[in-house]
Length: 434
Image (cartoon, rainbow, N blue to C red; front, side, top):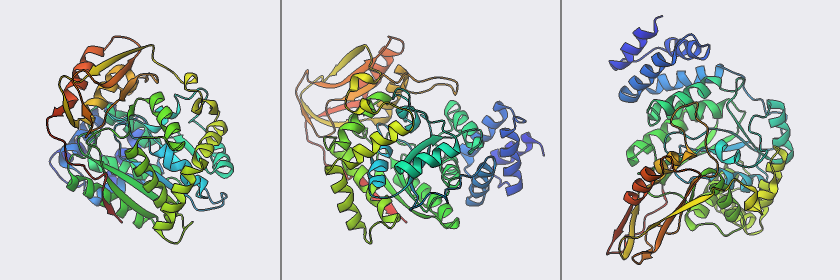
């Protein structure tokens, strides 16, 4: 086979065979296809999409590029949760500990920042000493002992996804539904799960801008899961404004702590509880979803999720005191206030613009080799619907140097829309698939 021929056929909208998809994935993983050719293929997929058969073949090839994680030695139901990516989305670090506190084993194989969205691994690595590069045996041990463990892709687990994930981020091909589905499901199916809860974001700050696109992505992933005999449900949730108030790695860890202590933002708390409840239900800890919701709420009130998260941080080499003493986390030396230009109501906060501004400050990546600055980000002082007066602080920018600062300021100022009339409230959870 020739790579250029497969690029050309996909560019022309033709369907590739499972053997051709497998050859592409395996050859790229071995380093036999250069980045520039795989970038061209990813761009062709971005514009032409892939069929369900192609996505399924890509998932299988990406899983087979490395080892599968056998969790049969770990007792209890294994249920994971994954988001398609949003701004300020730190629900994995809230729902995961709550589900684990209920008796679910939560093995998370997570990713890093993509485009304007944050990554769970980057957030966790802002905790001093925290390790996401556990060996498979260490991962099993933490999962068995604590009930909640998080690792990233490695040379052993889904290495093809690790290479493609970084390349997509640097080539503006992140938003492809087929590539999102293949990336997420290859990671999840490489782990011996019993259930999977998916949070498919839609709106300004999501990769899917329209609900019909989000529904198609949710259905694609749920179908892939069920073909592998995996219990799965997907929530389609609103991402027109950032979730919670904190955007940026260490800032979001602080907000996770506050939320697990029962003092988090209402929107973040609501969706985290619903995700945790569905993880508990798919794990068959309770007989009904309503019972699972009651249990998740009780565990939050009793701070059991907070204690579970501390236990997990310690087990993976981090300092659990960061949840009590925020000064132990990376803190940016400078801040800048964005104020309201007029009195009125906050009618909109463009989540994508906030996410891109945060990435410009150093919280995200422009190339796959970039490192992130864990201290920088944005903290919202208001949310959509709030009444503000002229000169009120809308948000604070936390930064370590002035590089990219002015453009970030301009983007954030443009992200806020102040109106004379109060906006209609929006539903956070739009629909359920599966």
